[in-house]
Length: 440
Image (cartoon, rainbow, N blue to C red; front, side, top):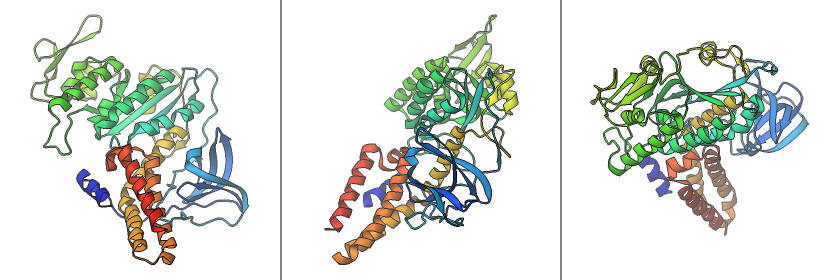
């Protein structure tokens, strides 16, 4: 336990200890129930099932909503349970973690139109819940969304996935994983493009395998200098060389001159010339090219204007309509539900990303409480007579289950907090053994 607490301190991560309760209500007396793995219960009417996934129509905060749950997210289903609508449900753990977030009012999506390509917008980061690469933007949730996107826009190669980047950076260790999922999975299935609102540091590195990138008018992309935990300790030596080499390979995936990303990582000068055929040629100085891209005292960051000037950006778009035109579509069906205040329809795959970030935010805010709930009851059980231990050990197990649920939702927590999957597994095995020993 001391080891776990020290790791939190070493990483410099501070977690708030706020208390929250998930609220769900159904709008019918004969209801269906989905019991989630953390113990919370979703009530409503199951309207669809496919490949083990379940869609349930429910009411959240007085607003009708339809939610999807994957088989890995629930333990059981109770159909046509006769009961009065529940005002609130709390997990069996004592209501320690809110699970079901409120969803804005929506309208029903249009049916697929024959011969018209379909597309979805997937957000990578948001301002409300979080945008950090390796925490809120991870490869795992992008990979989990693939079968859902296949259902929504098909597998015939005509579908379009727009990855909307909004991130100020994060863990460089997640870059290769995100790049691999985008390059090896998404790009092979669909026309996959980047729509850059903000992609700084690890976010730009994650997007750099995309051949087709568009900016918003306020978009920014670059500033990819790595740091050892704080801004006064930039990565250098062998670690820097590894990062430069990694990004050379990722640059090749996107078809970019490696010197662009190099100037985003270190203070390398860069200029460019556009020839008569419209091809852009880069030079590692500020005098050989007609356009100065980066001076030798700066770290390169593109904005919408500078990116378009050297054709790094394919165009600038602030609305989905503008993006569609920039991409050359006369007609495209953007899949999802129209949500008030959103610039694009919310597809099921996008809802997965949103729900993922909300749960990660909840887990971050409550991690100290999860651990305290576990540690306190372990200590109480250790000091209690044998016959009084079972309820205390059960409460300790509930706290441990909350930690396990957090890592199941976002495996990156294992790396960020424990240092890796194996370290987390080792810690978990130690705690399981401790609880077993307390019951002997």
